[in-house]
Amino acid sequence: MIKITDIVSILGLIVTFLTIIITFRQFKKHRYEKAKDLYDIYSKIKPLSKNVSDNYSEILIILSSFVSRPLSIAEVEWFIKEPRAFLQLELFGVIPEKYIMIDLNNKRFELTPIISTVRNQILDSLKVIVGFGGLYFFSLFFIAIIFNFLIPNLNEMIKFLFFALISMAYFFILNSYSNDVSNAKKLARWSINLDV
Image 1 (cartoon, rainbow, N blue to C red):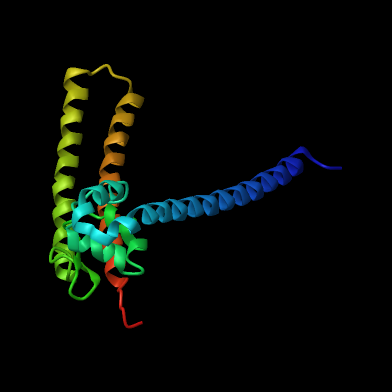
Image 2: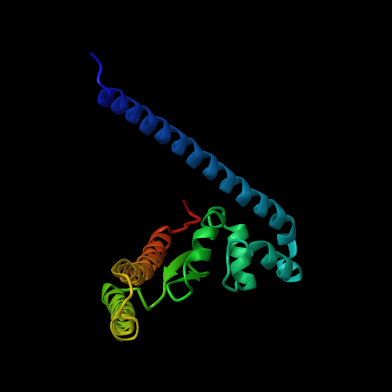
């Protein structure tokens, strides 16, 4: 005799399998749409690149959907004319300026001196961890004082939610920093050689 738990287990497996298939298809669709958007932007910029200095402001407006930092005329020309550089434009656009730069002479991305060596990366990481860690503990201390002395009758669950929210914000900031440094390293390893 078939038990209800067996049916529920089978249904759970089917739902899990269908969810994986749907997620995979959505991921492929999303990648295709991003590539299409990148191509649309490239096709808009390519005619303007014949005279970058005259069309500089219009090109910057088109590129602003990917890059928030200011690009020089030489950098814009490099992204347009270098075959594979335009593919890295979106990643370059999300990394803070203090971590990555363009070396136009060698035609590649380079880490800035802040994180160019392991020692500098450790020092920069410590600054972020200590700086935001101090802010984190100060915030926890301040909220604990408010909860215990100014609002002593507050529900324990609400207190817990406040502490959890502050903790999540702290770990979100650390994760964001870690992603920025990781993406900068990834882009710096991605070296462009015209000879290849």
